[in-house]
Image (tube, rainbow, N blue to C red; front, side, top):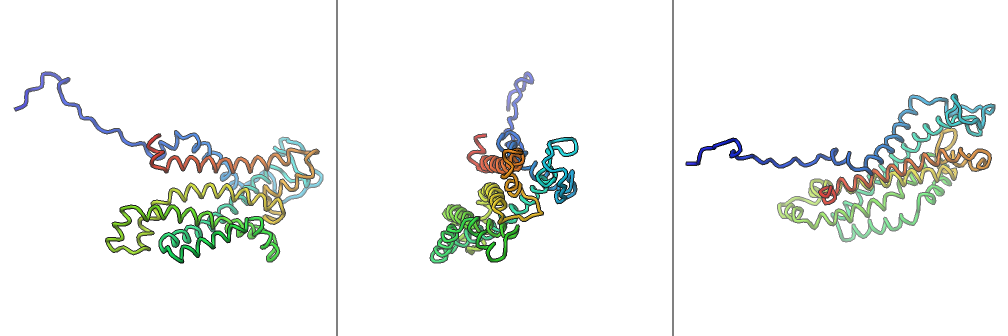
Length: 297
């Protein structure tokens, strides 16, 4: 029979384990993730805002108002055609986001599928897919855009296809390497011993365990797609006038660098903000989604 309690101090204290931090709790403490998310959100909101409102029409040319300095009417001034710079930046964000999303979507769709097939099938199938990836690496986005422009003409579709094709081998190699590591795990060997087929194991075990890696890589590829789209538009192979584009704004401003240098600074800063935001976001996601790094935080 236990001894009676003489005071509350003698009562046993139930010790409960502290709950683990939630993902968003850790994310809000991660400076890289917060800053990258804020910059990326700024670009996304600008693109969405341009769908319903811009200070002026980005397509309207007013030669009488060309090269106006910043004012209450035109917050960042006007370009050599009299178009409002703010309106061009907002509409250019829309073109950039559209090209990036579709191009990365193409790269993810084909790259992930080919990488998973190569990892699951092995043998000649893996060899053929990897050699195809090596062959595709020989055609960077600019070269692919030049060839496509020669056949179907320059435009947004040309840049989307060229950038998407260029991203396929990178994502194929990443998926195949990550999946190979999962296929060697004990729980996958147990699933094979239980009679599960390769397709079912790929869907139920391999893909979910490499999803975090693919998400992080997608943000990095998105940043590269933005740079590629700006480069192609600058060269005249991407988005065509009158559709605004940050790369085309740089092209239009190159002849006015000494007369109005800010015309090149504004789209250049927009590209830098978008790329920096996505890179910081990807770096933050890598830290948050990696179990080893997450425990350290």
